[in-house]
Image (cartoon, rainbow, N blue to C red; front, side, top):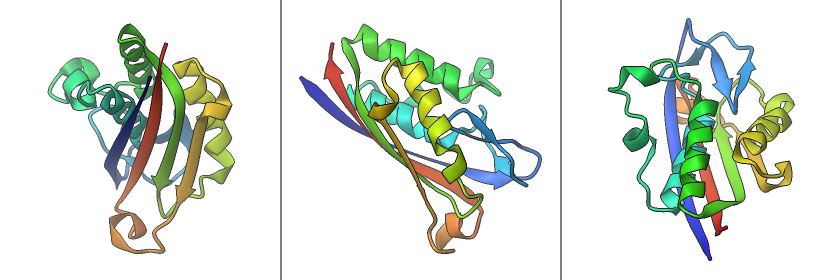
Amino acid sequence: MFRIGHGYDVHKLVEGRKLILGGVDIPHTVGLLGHSDADVLVHAIMDSMLGALALGDIGKHFPDTDEKYKGADSMKLLERVTEICRENGYSIGNIDATIIAQAPKLAPYIYTMRENIAHICGCDVSQISIKATTEEKLGFTGEMLGISAHSVCLMKKI
């Protein structure tokens, strides 16, 4: 049996924060604002995994009103989401995610992001697809006000 889920997340770019995407600290002049480390890619992926199993979203499992998640490492949260999925009898079939950012160029970091996510999710890197695109300087991402990410995840019964 298979289940499919979609996830979306967006965070504002601000000075004084690190830019972390897919567990990779990317050199940039600004970073993402959020209660946790604001890893917009991993947040979208977690929402797609939880959504596939109708288990809510990351706000339900890791509320930003809970101080224990302040500054949280999103890769640790992904580890917990993976456990929740396994507890419900599912593992990852594949993930296809897209990061929407005008800058910086993300191509040099994509494979490491894929490896990081595959390692945490306990699957092969070939099951994790990550792409990056700009919006040709249109909208909030094009104006470099924020970064967003979409993810689609196919979950399979264990």
